[in-house]
Length: 256
Image (cartoon, rainbow, N blue to C red):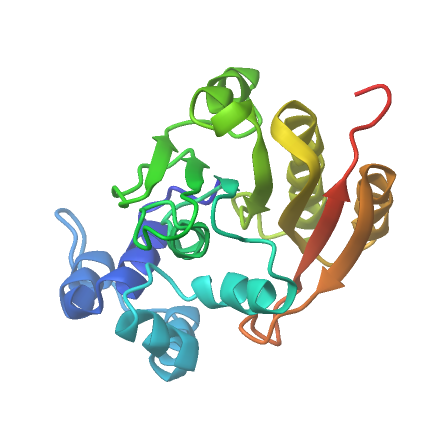
């Protein structure tokens, strides 16, 4: 569900393969088959400087995570422990796969520890994703498409998941209120998916951008979950409007 533009693909690559940084910057910012070299904008300079100095970016490289967002999920799960060995997890908007990496380890879906129950991790995204041991990726799939929903029970033991994860976001329009509304709509669509595949007592963790519609989303979640908390992990940049709703103890709506 993230932008498929060349620029964002470059940003993801910079986080995943830092050794290719110089080459990728050359390709993106300095060369064109039919134009003169283009000078980097101030925003691009600021982004590069922020990446170089970000401790979570450095840690993601050191620990072989596909991007820094892994630490947001690690931090939240360290506190609330909803990812347990043997759990079935559906990671919505999974590209490039950092949250799936965390889930694979926490639910033991790669069978790394033979003494623990083996879980299941399914990642869904409109983008292509590199394979990950212990995860089944549905690339080029829309998480809101009923056809995608129909496929998921094939991969989940008993046809049901224990946890739904969502770090997805819409393509940025440049208008904050519009982007906020679109992300709230994406989060709301997860309730339809929950009604089809989430086990009673299950959990949903979804990213949202703070704004006037956040309370409406929280109210919707409260109708079908026993508890709903708004979280801002330390790994989330302080100047970002992103927050996460952790909804637990799913109880299916009567009319669901």
